[in-house]
Length: 322
Ligand SMILES: Cc1ncc(C[n+]2csc(CCOP(=O)(O)OP(=O)(O)O)c2C)c(N)n1
Image 1 (cartoon, rainbow, N blue to C red):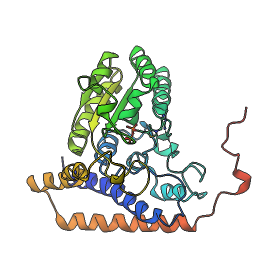
Image 2 (image 1 turned 120 degrees about the vertical axis):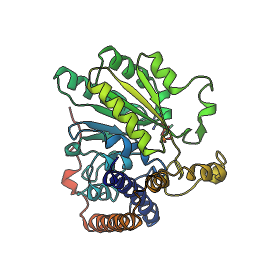
Image 3 (image 1 turned 60 degrees about the vertical axis):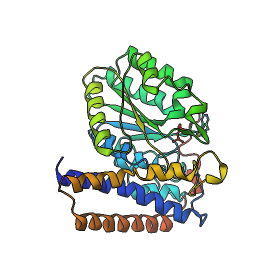
């Protein structure tokens, strides 16, 4: 991969990381009133997958949506506007963090109902297939979504119709405070379940953006080429609490040593080490890119704070009323 491309991957992961750190810092001011689920530590998945997509391809996401939204080309200004509940937000200030949508960027929506977007993504892929288009649909979700019935229904239909669908399971080993070990038998993997349903399923290091992008490229090629749906399982780890800006070691479901071990595998540091090893690291270029990203984020926060709240007359504008 060229040094420019590696730097771009770094920039995209840094944008997600830094945006979320800034959200975490500002959250305490109580101006952002929607719940936030931060993906700090998990940046390699959205960036590695989305960089392999064509602009016409579409993505769906979950409650942990900021990284997917930004990596798919969503606007940082509109993200901040949305988190601040302003009319300039990508969902016009009506949705908040868990309901981001930007159809122009091919980001077809995030919802916090576990597994819900798998059905929406399956429907989108079905439409693509009926229209004989070449678009691929990606749905990002966590390991707990596999435990929802909608996963099996969607997967079965997608396999039956050989839909151009890529399911990306970000397996951070946790469903709120419950580790995978109390939810699923140790002898059965997520890939086993997907394969049992007739799907191609692959697993790789979810904290290595290069490994993620390689898996994504193969999966997207299969899906686009008529080979049917593919599931990619990406083991990773969220650094912050399930919901909110802080850490939650007081809850007792995980130990700080676990976080420390995963921080050793930080996706951004991993990429920098790779750049150093292959002789393409440029410390000055990384610093410049970090400074540019910080400026972008500062401008987005200013923009959001200066934006108006949605007008009362728009309260029902996007509601479905039969
Ligand atoms: C259908 C449904 N059941 C329960 C919940 C409550 N809930 C919100 S997030 C969450 C855990 C999600 O874990 P996972 O899907 O692995 O994603 P992560 O939060 O780890 O990124 C649960 C159980 C929900 N939102 N929807």
